[in-house]
Length: 112
Length: 121
Image 1: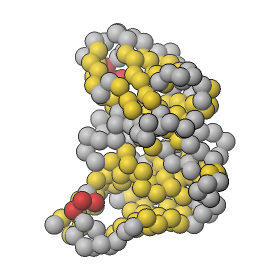
Image 2: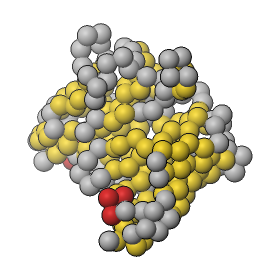
Image 3: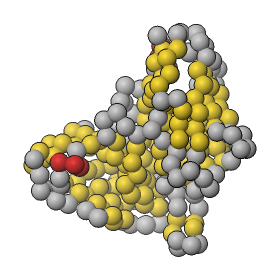
């Protein structure tokens, strides 16, 4: 069964800290993996997408890596800010279909 | 348009009534996805389309849920005879998919609409 797991479920850090969010998935035959953020009461904002042939993607203070063989992806946030407070979701699409499975998310709170 | 549009923002239905939700994908995107998020919990995949063709409907409770994407019309998700457990936010996403020569990279990101909050009383 294809599953996506995110740890930790919640994280509270002081402003300025670098942090890592983890995503693991079963079945390494993925098509792509996408990281999103969701603010309370809002939809999803796409952060980074990594194709199965890629190892990492970077955007500003965000860096996402992918290790298919171990079934893991990490989202690294540098110099965290209070505005980074949100729920971060990892979503995996496997080959053979257009079905995306989401993890339960990591709720991040950055204290000023 | 440049954003995925979903209507209505909120929908209230009595149990057993019909509910119909609409989604206009980003112009040029030929793939559409529907998700259900119950009580801020996990996103559950419902169905995906490539243009007007259903691509994957393994997440759809078929006995009451149906969806369409017809040419020159917004996509729709319809729930016949709503139940209390259908109360959720329904999100639509669209994607270009494939390799974009102009950008020399894959363009597979899913872009999400703001969602429709369905409340079944």
